[in-house]
Length: 113
Image (cartoon, rainbow, N blue to C red; front, side, top):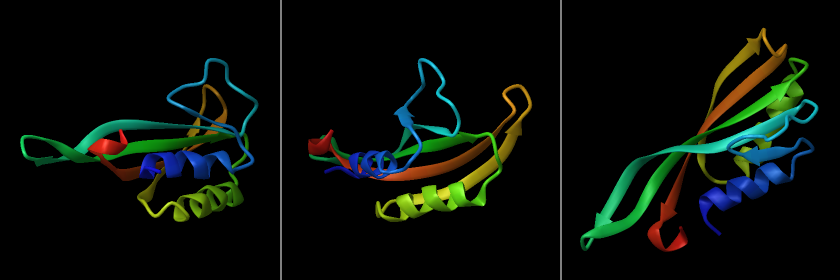
């Protein structure tokens, strides 16, 4: 299983719904979104891509500012064996939601894509 698949599996164990890239209809908060944003580093071998370090973000939206929610997501991320960091906590006036954001980096070998 690739590191990105491991991340997706860990997020699926949480009690809040997650989706990749975007919701077609927003669920009742709390809910989350994860996405790949770019290939941070590419490893070349024998004139082809052997693997890439891929970075992305995980966003959680909640009606309440809960430290427990943050701890729950971070405990799931700790099980993945990937690089991650908490990036920000914002309050969005237009949706009246707390927005928690983490960034992550995973390695994907070319044969795992």
